[in-house]
Image (cartoon, rainbow, N blue to C red):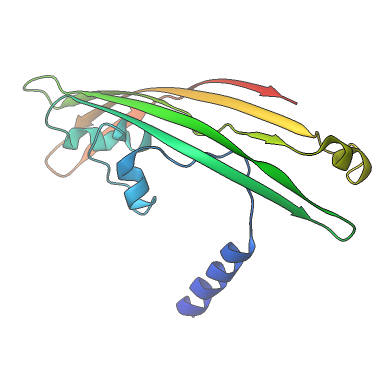
Length: 171
C-alpha cells in the first residue's frame, strides 16, 4: 500500500508544473539535503531550525548567491503562450553567534524565500484571458530572522525565531 501511495505522489508531482513566486533555498546545505532532514548544523539553522544552532561550536557567517532562470508555459484549449525566459539573482546571509562557555546560541538570517517576476505578452492576456490576470506581476520579498537556541541537555534543545517581512507587489 505504501509503495502505491508513493508512486501516486510521484506521478502527481511529475504532472504538476507551476512556477509561482517561491524561490529555492540558497543555503548550500539546504540544497544538498533537499528539505529531507530537519537537522541543520550551520548558520542557516537560524532560519530553518533554530534549535539546531546549539550544534554550532564557534561563530559562523554564511552567504550564498543563487541564479534563477525561469520559463513559464501556458497551454489551454484555445491558445498557448510562453513567457520569455527571465533571470534573477537572489542571495542570503546567515550569522550564528556562540558565546563562550554558554548553552545559548544566537542567530540572524536575511533571506528572500519569495519573489520573482512574470510578464506575459499583453495582447495575449487581453484577448485570451480577458483581463482575468495581469500581464505582468512582480514580487519582492525579504525576510529578517533573529533567533535564539538553548541546549537543555546533551540530546535536547529548544529554539525560536521570528520572521520580519518586507515585501512589495507590482502588477
